[in-house]
Image (cartoon, rainbow, N blue to C red):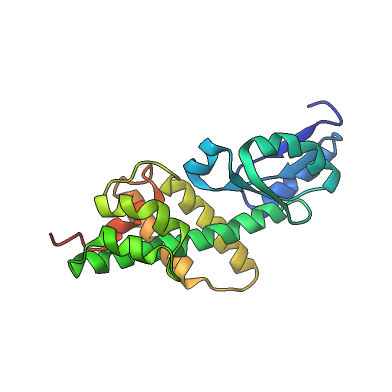
Amino acid sequence: LTPGSLVIDCSTIAPATAKAMAKRLAERNVHYIDTPVTGGTEGAKAGTLTVLCGGETNALKQARPLLEVIGGSIHHFGPVGSGQQVKAVNQVLVAGSYAAVAEAIALGQHLQLPMEQVVAALVGGAAGSWALQHRSAAMLADQYPLGFKLALHHKDLKIALDAAKEQQLELPITQRVLEQESELMQGGLGNADVSALRRCYPANPN
């Protein structure tokens, strides 16, 4: 890398790793920003991902034209590593919302409710979520085409739990989802979508 160049890191890594990379690159006069994204396969294809940024303001200004190609919204949270911290918060929310949808669908199916109708009724109310809107159909069909790989989300949850541990904070829901994902990975579902969490609950009795 030539001095004065800029590294735009869209991967999801530990905040400490991002800071270490920025420090090492700075020794070569190379700028670095961490820009993890969220929005799933749908957002990537449509160029509407949410970009979570950490780094110097001038570096982000330089990167913005490129980030706007993939991102519908770009947010700057502070110094290097802060984008990764926000991504950790995001993945905790994803864990809880996907697990909640999986549990709700399991209950509804065992009650023999018309679940497509149930989802349509609930998605616009207080129980509505991105996971319910975009992943309930996969859970109902018990088919999990890739949106975001379960094994990658598992890796991200480890990062989030490490961050929580540093703050002496327990995240019991996140910890439980991590354990569920570990079980699914052992069963060969690591490459499936995160919505495969539905497999952690008893199958539709019908």
